[in-house]
Structures are given as structure tokens and as C-alpha cells.
Image (tube, rainbow, N blue to C red):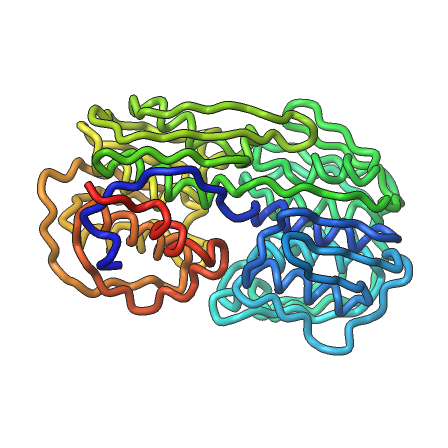
Length: 428
């Protein structure tokens, strides 16, 4: 950390592949009989867990430099896993796997690390149960998740909260259900599953906030190009905007409309940002350039934009602290159920820099910081990759060398984060 202080950050960079897309590509390629190649995937702790669980079903996964080859016998030929399917720290793997396994007609037990053990899974088990899935949870809510073979029927389901993981779990189960599965959303959550299901040949349609999927389908093998993860790019975007003389150009990043809310926030705050879309086939892909922004204003975020930037809210709290007026976030209660209570973690840790907050049950107000005043040099990362990188960005912008108790969780989504910062740093 100390070597990064008192520098500007300039240059071109490609961030790691999108985590959400990599998870889904591994699962769909595994369901499709034949060979699929996943190009530029994210290779991290979370995606390794997904690959390992697919291997337990009898899928051959070959990890090569810059790509993953998936050779599958097809879903109808999957075997019952002989051991517990361990998902580590990955909530996406855990929840999507619940839907996938429920549709296969096999028995399996799923569990993760200590953080997964306290994350609610009933939001997935309830709709899957309505489809006929036989799922047992500890205290009716938490892992381990015991799934027994069952026959599924399609349902029409109104999402109580905007959650791409819940929606995706239902769609995975719906592939094997009898009838047409219909999902209604109040706010649009990320739609990588819908886009990719169509790529793999599924009969799926999306009209506004309604998704319809025909059941009893088999997927066809496809090659998938994974764009850069905008959730990882967000840390570099904020760093560039608040660090004097910085200018970062991020290449080939996902511009998926259901994920790109952070771009809207930068524009709302009068930040120096340029966006160029280079591809519209399947996932939208493009380039983002962010320069140091002298006249940042503020933001007010609530409603349908929140699912489009839910993972970026920790680092957006840092951005808000460098604005000219208080910034407000509401309707983000979902953050209390991530790797940790992210709303609480953001407030507790950033307050140590002297940033003032007003906390709500579903968000906060972050006030502009006039002067950095460390109340402690010791910070907690909560084994949460987004909290840890948020703290690193804030420390660099503040010019303070801090101690984070355990920064290893960066490997969950951006293993080379510090290395990339070293490559971008320049003397002022």
C-alpha cells in the first residue's frame, strides 16, 4: 500500500473477466452436451468453486491460459456427486446451484464457508419449493442445503426483491420443469442469465420486466467471450476521479444496461467520464475513460437504479465523500445480506477516515470530507473483497498508509488489483 501513495494513476488497463458472466458460462456450458470454450474468464476463488462443483457432476473442465474448455456429457448424463458440493465464499455459486441441482433429479448437499453459512437461502428455496423442489435448510433458512431428487413444474412468480441470483436459480430450474416458467420483476435485476440462455439455444423471451422460459429444454454448446467486470472497473474509475492528475482508460469492459448504473452516477456527479460501446452482440462491451474530476457534485440513488449498481455501492460511498454536497443512497437493504452487512461495514470503516454518515435501514447519507482525520490506523476487511478494495482506494486518495487485517479476499474477484495499481501509478 505505501508504495502507491502520493502518485497519480495513468494508462490503459483491462480488468478481470466479469464474475457473474463467468459463473453462468461455466454452468450453462456444463448443461450442454459437447464442448464449449469460455474465453477471457475470471479466474478467481469464486469461479473456481463453480468449476469444481460442475466437475463433481461429471463435467471435464480444462483450465488453460486465457480460456476454459468445458466438455460435458450433457445434463441428462450427470452423476450424483459423491461428496458435499463446496461453494466457498461464493453466494452466486450457492444460489444458482440450488436451481440447477433441483432440476436435475439428483440428490446433493451444498455448503460454503462461514460467511455462506449465515447468508439466507430461503429466498431461493421458497420459489423452488413452489416448483416442487425438495430442499432442506438449517433452521429453514441457512446452509447446509440438502436437495433430494424431485420432479418440477413451472410456476408464475413475482419477485419480492430485485435479485439476479434468485431469478437465475428459478430459470435454471425452469429449464427442466414441465410448462412455461414466468417471472415478474418490480425492478430489473442484472440479465446475464437471460442473455446467455438465449445464446445457448434456450426458448426464452423478455418483455419489459417479465421473463418467460419454456421448460423441458436442452442447451447447445457455445463459445462465450467474457467481457471485463464493471464491478472491478468501478474501483479504478473512482480512484481516477478522486486522485489528482489521474487518467485511466479501461478496455473491453461490460456495458450491460442492467449493470452500468455506475456510469449514470458518474454523469450525475459531473465526473470526467467517456464511454464508447464497441460491441452489441450478446453482452454489450466497450471502453471507459475516467479522468480526475475537480468539480464532483453529489448523487441521490434509489429505486430501479439500485439493482444496477448494488455491488458498487461501497466504493460509491468513497466517491460521494469527495463531492461538494451530501450524497444519498436508499433502497439498498439487500447489502445487509452480502458477504457481510456491507452498509454497516462501509460506515464503520470509512468513518475512521473522518467521513461522516447518517445511517438508514436501507442506505445512508455520506457527507463531503473536508479533511482526512484518521481515528485509527487499523481497518477490518470482513473477508469481503469489495470492502477491502474500497478501503485501498480511500487510503490512496487520502495519502494514508493503513493496516487491513486480512486483504486476501481480493482474490475472490480481482486477484491482480494491487499489481494493476502498481502498473498504473506514475510520479506526480
